[in-house]
Length: 242
Ligand code: SAH
Image (cartoon, rainbow, N blue to C red; front, side):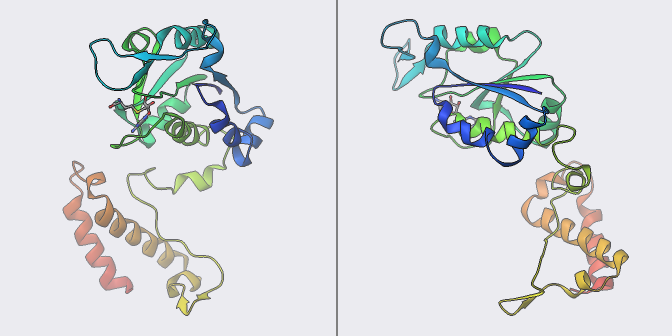
């Protein structure tokens, strides 16, 4: 996948692309990317990239000129062009999968009060919010989207570790433990060291249901599953203990 990130602060993003799993994905040719400094496309001598709002109001808006020129240079034809914005559609795992199927992803990071609506109307295919809160700038949101998307690309992460993750089947992940078996006088649950595979599977499923009901009952709603899951938990608890 090709990723082009348009930002006024490329240095905020560089470390991510040059580290760890992303660096390996780039090295192996699974991802190619560019970090474009929108300021490079400002034509006046001060490289001005923002101005006041028409109609008044506090704050500044990113100028359409430099941003539009940066988009033209990136080449928007056939690309998904994302503007990260608290006013966008809410991002989730299904949305990440949808974007991961594309060949080219362009992400615009906003600053100040955001970007001129005409740029959105002309170029943006997806205005995406990463959650119901307001960040000071789009770089962190762009990284959230880039990270959620690229790890789904074939070959970046082995299939097995993706399949059982939170959200992949509408449930959160089960609690996980590693060595030592006794940490600060707290033992790993017996079932996990029992070697009884079927019981481990059952225990993990039960924990996933419990956790989803506790933290994210909304994930179960509308599926007509909530009542059913509650009775399953009760049943499994009676059978399985702990
Ligand atoms: N005036 C805007 C907020 C601007 S915040 C409004 O009220 O909607 C500045 C920039 O941060 C935005 O342009 C956007 O790129 C980014 N940003 C802030 N919160 C975000 C969120 N929840 N999701 C995605 N991007 C966000």
